[in-house]
Amino acid sequence: MPDAQLLDIATGRLAAVRLGPNEDLTLGLKKAAAALGFRRALVRSGLGSLLDAALQTGTTATHRLRGPAIEILSMSGEIALEGTEAAGISGVVGDTNGAIWAGLFLVGENPVCVTVEAVLEEILDRPADLLARGRATSPRRDTSRL
Image 1 (cartoon, rainbow, N blue to C red):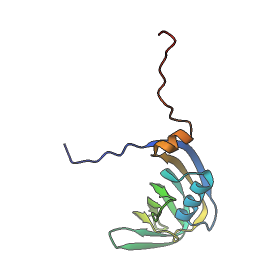
Image 2 (spheres, helix red, strand yellow):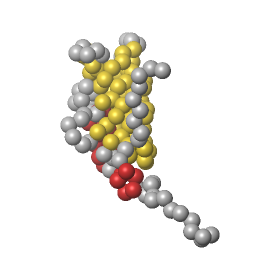
Image 3 (cartoon, one colour):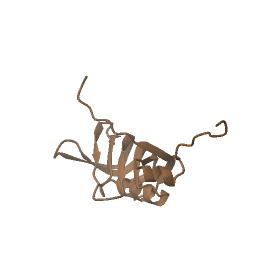
């Protein structure tokens, strides 16, 4: 069996969000998560168009695509509002010549062209979060038959 680490998390609410023209992709999704009250969120899917795109395509390589209308074909990732973690959202895009590119969207450098639609899922990985949402309760013992 390969070496692996498992992380036991719970997820909460699910939201479909829409970003409008000139909003930055990663900052806009982070802002949407905050408005929904999500401290952390998974970006489950998304599509839409960007004016221009900037992707980290390797450990240090950056690729900039000039639009307008760079199409987001798919995206996924994680958003963290606490601490110093930034939104880590990866995606696949098509440029105006039909070439396909993939990488990590650079924060502040991917303005929306018309719209971007994405699905965010709240991450509840702390027992306190679960209790606050009413999704976990203390075990109760049925004593009516004793």
